[in-house]
Amino acid sequence: MDTNLRLIARSRAGTGALSDFATSAIEYQHEHTQGPLQASWKLEDGYGQATEAGLRNWFNNRIMWPIVEMYKGITSWSGYIWEMRLSVGNRVYTTTMDGVYNTVLVKYKNDDGDDVYTDWVTDSISVGRYGSREYILDVNTTSADEAEARAAGFLRLSAHPFSGPPQLYNTLEKATLDVTAVGNIALANGIVLRDDKLRSHPGYPAWDGDDQLHYIKATEVNGEPWTVGQEVKRILDVVSYISSDAIGTSDILGAWKQKGWIYPGKVDANDTPTAMGVPSSTGAWDRLQELAKVPNKDGEIYELKVGWDGRVDYEIETQRPAYVAYPSPGRIEKFDRSIPTWDAKPGLIKLLDPSVEPISLPSARYYDKDLVKSDRVTMRDGDEDCQFQTIKDNEIERWAAEDSISDWVASILKEKE
Image (cartoon, rainbow, N blue to C red; front, side, top):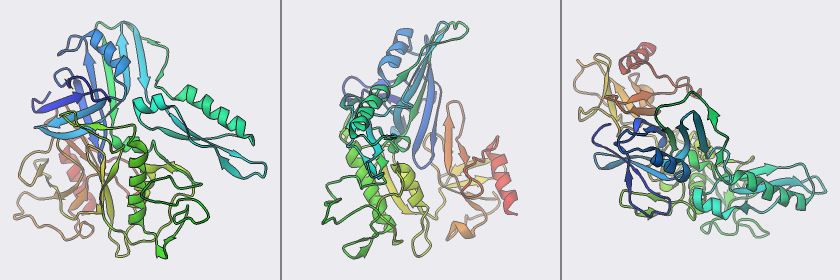
């Protein structure tokens, strides 16, 4: 493991000593897209400070614990433990947050055949342990009593992590624990935007009623068009408000910031008109990604960037490259000539022939055939540098990673000839 890397775990309550497990982690890796996306590692009995008893303690107690990665003293990735697989002897046990929902709303029909909803029903113990995870349950009934009972029954089965029966495999000599963590991007969809009404927030008063100022599918407020930029800010405010009472993010000193899964940072104006809310219920992050694809009236493109603590910046896409790529020898560098590793983030890459000096910075990437955007960055323990990947064919989400950076750069250059 890189000696400049620290991996910190701490209880969600923010109590107890910080647990630095970098010397015990095997095969550690992380991914960035718009922000921290996913990380994974393995712990093995006898490696570093790991013991079988310690692995069992992790498995039983650390689901949804905050994880902070620090590189040279600066936070470079953060997230929450999402899934663990404990292998002991010939048995493998799994605990996962997949399918965990602790706040449910039931959609059903009234006697006239119209869609109606129950109030949100919450398992407060689960929310306190794991943060808000919302779900809209569509049931085939016209009975309000049955709908409310279905909500209670749903929570009994889904409010806590699933741990299935052990699977039998060949006996292992040492106990191991495989851990997967996810970043705030993956968690933001745990807040649902409803298709029938806007979510409450004290900064947006009078949501639904006869004298409503804001209402679902509104295209104007006080006679002024509602814009994409305003809707992005509203969604970020709502997600932060709903999730902030149950979740925090710990920094290295243990200071807790009650800001929710994600919260608004810099939000640029986007004057393209839109409507409040969504026509069909959807996860908050999915809707933000849709809005990020909408240019303003001048045709400028926007991007979402998520910081390690969940801060979201919605900005006009930068035109300045963050990296330089040399096709021969195949390498990508920062402008200070250092090699990006654990601190690398997605960004624009200038494809450059080493003989060309000085570097000519373009005015816009859409007119520079040698400027490409990296959408995803992966760094793995043992690698000397990170892997940059990009999405081809515009909206087709197919990762175009090659076996090496030189092959990747060469393939892009060839496409642009």
